[in-house]
Image (cartoon, rainbow, N blue to C red; front, side, top):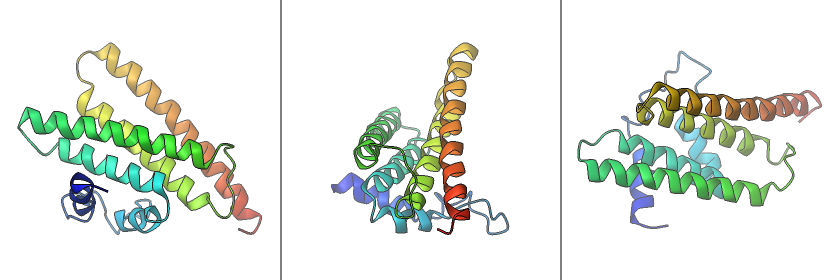
Length: 156
């Protein structure tokens, strides 16, 4: 952990990061849940730090800070994906990993979609290409959710 990671961790608990959270909408998972489970899952906490960096990249007007945090977000997400692949060489949802896998796959999907909507504005073609990629990632999220629901029905 370094100073930037600490800054990103603090950002996760700030009201500005959590503005999308609305208790009247039960489909939103509070950042506190991600943090709680992320502390025992290296790939999940790296993904949460990546989301925090992406968020910070949208809050600055200085191009250097925007580029720094956007690049940092990409690097953290790549590292999170690498850690996820090492931790789950066979994509199988079990009672011990289902919550981490669900939260991780959801966070990756939200991160990619947020990045696309904020940064992919060069052309309609590049936006559609990237958005299509994001939809395919969401299909992976749905596969994890389907396995989670199936496991849950079997008495998780």
